[in-house]
Image (cartoon, rainbow, N blue to C red; front, top):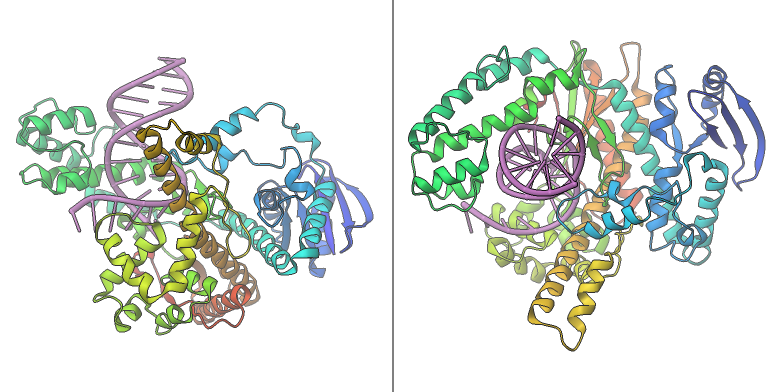
Length: 566
DNA sequence: TATTTCGGCGCC
DNA sequence: AAAAGGCGCCGAAATA
């Protein structure tokens, strides 16, 4: 059974029952209060709730202590289908951009220039889009179903995978809101102690903490620049050059190569200054309330399908302050991390049994050493990163060919994705999330280089852009499919956790970081939660890759604070 | 003065 | 040691 909710979650609601063929059965107008009652009454029969945007609807239910097991997020699913290679030519893909479409600029705010064209496109199409009120969830739902049916008619396997992706993405949307509601348990006392230890006491009236001020003085003295503000790149760069350092920027990798007494205190200053500005007392005041950090997760916020966050920088919590993430009394944090996820993903996608076998013992990088492919674990890692990211220079680029030789199938998959991107074509993840197409500027550059009178600069530019896009599509298939595996992992875990609840509480997802999950659990359930995490990972592997013999090794630990994990 | 861009760096 | 894919966020600098 599917139940479509229309209208506004806080105002008047229209509840519509739809059968599995998309035929409307009943329609019910409801007030907000009546909605809550209907959700509570109908949820036990496990309907799939269909709504335009989980982040708009679900908080209203959660604040009334209602959870739902399944949903279909029309906005998220629309954007997957709209871009999907598999859905090319369908009505949904061909239709005008409308209010269901995310602005591409929102989808990818990368400053790497790779997506400049998309941003331009977004600006152009900003105006004439349908207004918000035009969203009809039933029409959109029917359209999405018919899109899947159309795909299934010629490519049933592709349709089945997309359906799984849409369900996983929607489940992710539920999880994101549930995690935000529960929050990440955060000890401001521990956080404050860490800051005080590293930076000195909290400044009463703003300004630099003690230790930063002391380091500033040291730097000024060593550079003989009395008024220097070390936060000013321009001032600092001038002062460094004046003192005889041969640097072109103030970045730490360049500084590290210099031999000068100022380097050490300056690097220390930068490290602490970063902590102070990114996760210092101001951050604590802004983001921690009642012992919980509640970041806003943005499901599908990254083109590859990874999540982003808005505010608080939740996905970049530095190691220095992870000790502030502490389980409540009588509770524990079960932290699980998928080891070498992306290599396992490309092994499974390509059906490379040899590479899958290298991961069988748990540590895939060590497996590469044991197989005699590279001589050290560190080399295995850097070679693999080179394969996944498309290294062109350095040690990574030198080592990567060893992998290509030993594992032509798996490496061939990412190489092929790179070639596809270089041509300007789309690539897709295992479940069917497709990469964006390069924009007009990209194509214009390629055309310019292909013309008879093209200058060497034109050709260089075109080649550069092509390779950049190829590195993006190369990584897209691995990162995107890894994100799908992680979504399935979490979706399965969530259901298992709900079943573990007892009178002492319900273990729940508290944090998610691409290939890592954290469950906040009553302490006595730690073992059961560990089992649930492990089983859910196995399920996710089977769900995506069937019987292919790849394992997704996990490290799982139950700890009282996050810094004890790893 | 307010907003956008840039360099830098945290995370995976 | 640096560099490649994806992000968000900060203060300073640049721009409107």
